[in-house]
Length: 450
Image 1 (tube, rainbow, N blue to C red):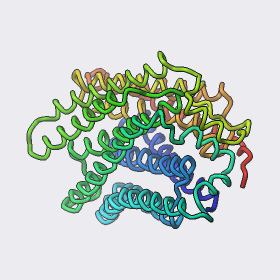
Image 2 (image 1 turned 30 degrees about the vertical axis):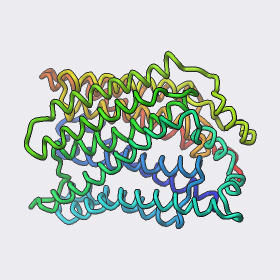
Image 3 (image 1 turned 90 degrees about the vertical axis):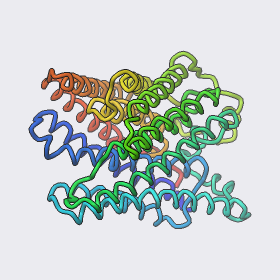
């Protein structure tokens, strides 16, 4: 196994995702400063956020966790790079098609968007099969590979590895990620069919069913499922009972599918689906906040202690303490945003209003990305964590910007536009993104065993 392969592929996805996020954030800040530009920039912003930012980040983090914690590797490294090229090219072509109002770039981009999750599924399955074959070989088994892993990979095993106490909730989370990916494949195929049948075909066509599948089924469902994997590891305690999370998962996907099927057959079930989905999100947010605030413990379970004892002493620059400092703050803020979104879906909110979409993407999910970043990026990227005070400044800037932006959208929809809130929120959120990238980009790499 080439050790650097475990880092380069996930880092490629993560770098591309943050590049797209930066462009999308700048466009969002520009629209906030001058709403007259929204007509031209909003469609591009809507392409970059779900497909260029969050989808690529999901791909990259999945490869990182599988490679660093379980030793999963692809038979041929070019498989993963091909997926990255296909996924990013799809986003770029969609943006180009929208800018020049041309049919063929947009249609080609949609086809690539369909191909990317299929390649992702194939890569995961082939990687698992290949790794199992390696584990049966005496010369190149996974145990031999793990003894060669760099210090940061040893830390990843401690932070992301399998723990018997978390087995039941891991099974629920794994089921959720599988369902989310299947829904995304369905959504991309559906989108491709719609775009090919559109005589203009220069923009990404959305319907309510497609938005439910992509925004809430794929991105939201994956986020909730991954959070169930991460919460016990980051907070150092089991997230039991697993049955509670199973019920919430059924409610989440049930609400999504109820709305999608209703849109297919022309029945107005979206309101019922929104209520069911919102209740599931409120329950999930309360559960994760309970774990983080009320039941949080710094003591390790016996299983975690055995995992830590099996690893060598870690480099002092690599943290395996789980959520702490700015990481736990971002985690709590993210779930508070989720709580607000869930309440809005249950009471009166439109799931695809500007306030709801920004609550989902900018408030909820991006805050969790910051939490995971401050906790796991020192391991995945092999970099020293930023200074705590600088991290808090970045987090405060980003979260205040998100709150102002979301609040302005709520007021606009009520008929009371607040341009100052909109402009300042967009600028602060954009500056927060740039600060986050600068904090990691300017840090010196930590020492690694090559």
